[in-house]
Length: 108
Image (cartoon, rainbow, N blue to C red; front, side):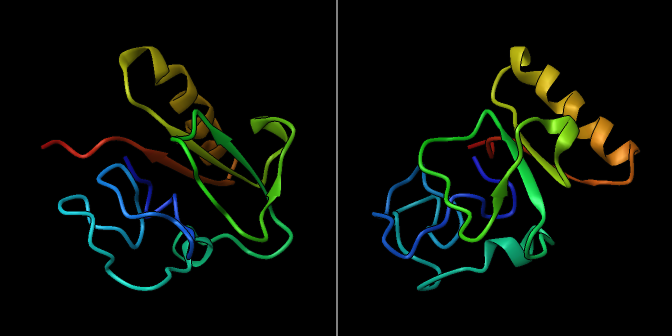
């Protein structure tokens, strides 16, 4: 499950469940490191709310927001229908002209 390579770390162990820089099949790295904050269009000092994150996401240099409503950017991960309420928080952020991403598992 990835939102533009959300879970990235230069020390991450390759695994099929890792994202960003790690291939979904075979666990082979695409690159040594990926600038996830750049891919997500996050700027230094912006606060980010990460909702329902997969195990081990790393966003170096990102300021965690107390709530989605307080965040400059919202990243919501949706795995099951029950998680769709979190996606609504990301949609609300987008409607308020804030940065919003929704990550979901790739089929297959």
